[in-house]
Length: 312
Figure: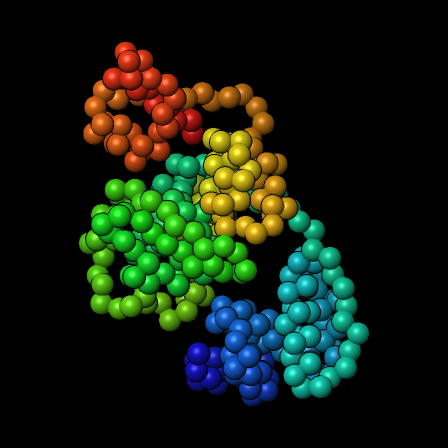
């Protein structure tokens, strides 16, 4: 990341104050090996403090400004504290870091048809990203970093490199995802190279999501983030298999405590039942598996197989 890409415009600089030390701090973070997405979030947090008239050279001023933000959740205050704490350490400022304990909330889980509405309604490139998220449960950064060399069209697999100290994973792609990737332009090393950073990609998605939510008269769509689809994937995989280790492997978690969240997200209430299909040939079985059906039983000496998929 180049410093000129991080530097605010002249208008913004006048509004929030001198950002030269912030820019130097971001360059220092880059040299220390911090990820670009982390640097961008820290940039936003520190410039936000300036906008609130905090004096970044005075830790007590920063502490007071953060404490006075009554509309901020504890988790948001925690993020800003961590951003300033690293800034203070680099410039040698001493302060007693305030402690805000984030309250973990159960995430919003959309319906599958709502995710499908998004995939179909946004532009092709964002739709491709959302379909990858739906099939793999990958984090936004893992998808953004995908290279064409991570796709094996012959074996029909997609490989994810680890992010946030998780495990790398490999997935079998659906025929739909394979077709979308095959017809997508391959002019750059990275699949989503059109976007200069992850934040730019997120903003593009949010604009398209807002328009589609209005068009379909469904405000719930605005609650769906890329990471929301990861939560949906973990929940549905646990609902189908009741195998927490399977879900842990799918999501790449190293600590099963992170995976146990998905045991709490199963919808309590009336079972919606299953959609059942019969396959008499291997080709029919392949088609059903690609559509999300799972083999349930077989009869007629194994010549006829029964597949099922939960209703959504």
